[in-house]
Length: 126
Image (cartoon, rainbow, N blue to C red; front, side):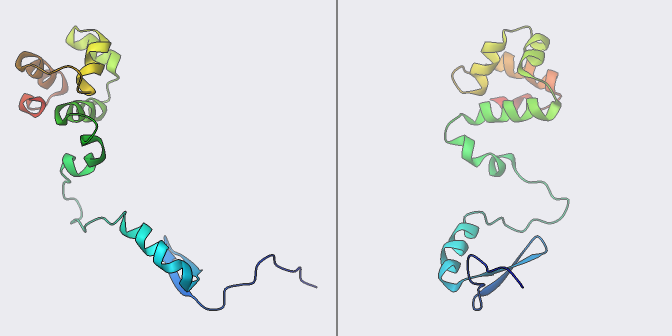
């Protein structure tokens, strides 16, 4: 004898496929689900194409400066911690942190040193 279910199975609704799994969603829940999914919509990119960093970091651009977000992204891409990069540049770690958070400007000379240390074009940090 089968056990009684806590909720009745959904007989009507919409089948949704997510990552190869099918789900039956009640019609009353479909509108909120669609609005949630629309918020995460990604434009189709050609495979292997590059995505601009501003598109990836758009949430952070409101809170931080463009140069700070670029610096943090370049540092992480190169595999450096703040301490390691600061030692390589000959500055204190807290100064690097302030640059990433937009609380300290990145001057032209510092941008050149960052570009050399991270093997990137220094103009990205200006």
